[in-house]
Image (cartoon, rainbow, N blue to C red; front, side, top):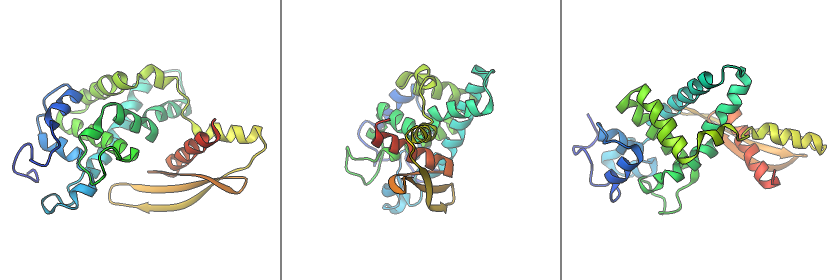
Length: 238
């Protein structure tokens, strides 16, 4: 049973259905899935009828589905690459920076229900919503159709898959190589590790010659170090 009686509840943003259909290219079979995909916890947990019915479970599912979609695509397209090379390519698709950028270009910010001021929704909230949307599409359409929608309608239409395949997103390797060339010392220090119901969250700090330069968070220590490295690369203009 959905957690509201109407298929499309009254609290949705203006023209929600129209904008969503434009993004998806089809009319959703189960509206409650897509409504939930755009419910941020800051909104849901402040409404008695929506309490704890936010998008985090769909976000968890969408993260797994996206990993599978990209993994299968790269495995089939690049039979000559080894595991490490495939993993580095996959990061171009599933890293936080790419998902945040994709969500912005798809204008998901116009559909999110949250307590943030319009126009000031944090980038990571957009990226998380992107994953929740993928989870909703999977539950509505199944895996094969979700593959086509994610690769063709989402990624290739808004970011260009060929560009992603030729983008170096291995920021950790980039900054370690820079440090080696410039005789600098890079160290990653764990700040926090917490395990929730759906996923873990790691936060690390990147130290340059013993001085804090950047922090990053992710669902694994590896992801957190990549995010900290990305921010450090931005600061160093690498």
